[in-house]
Length: 112
Length: 116
Image (cartoon, rainbow over all chains, first blue to last red; front, top):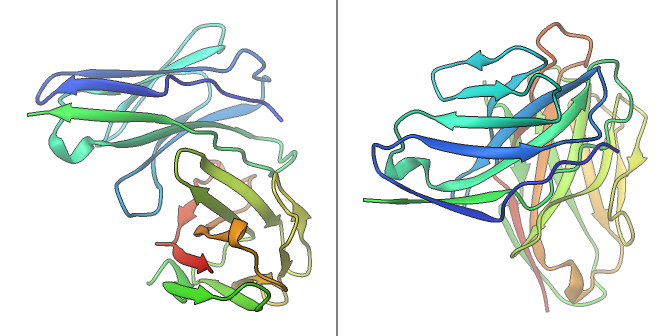
């Protein structure tokens, strides 16, 4: 199973950009990079995903390194509601194992 | 459209008792998953299913059994509950991987289980 590595915690100030890194050095060419977040006392929710090109949606942006061995989730203006645990996982396009492993994620603290 | 619904939301068991957690999804998703979450441990995959009638082991399957008799339901069973199974359990579902969007996982709101 391809694995990802994330910092345990990060801190940001409200209304400032946040860059959450994820390393996935063993990624294969057919793995999608998915990001989820989990707000306190809730189930995880989908944030964004991508394969090779950078991606934007209403919640965040995903920047993928050219060699695809790392990616960065970008929150352009952090709000207090963005305080959550953020998970980066890999998912195979070709439908290999669906043994989707989440790990511990990065706990983001947003200061007012 | 309810998405992923987990029942019950809370449960307290005594050691040795059995119970079944139900996960139901109304999105016609092929894939379903059971995770547990303990403080400081993140999400750990217990079992998963890639279609009706199929199941597979995840990272921490011991002490749990699952069944997927209907496409919309994924049951997680504890035959003889132990205090180590005190946790929050999350169910998730996803569409077939070949969809162009490589569909994301949709999670339920969790079941908080305490085993005394």
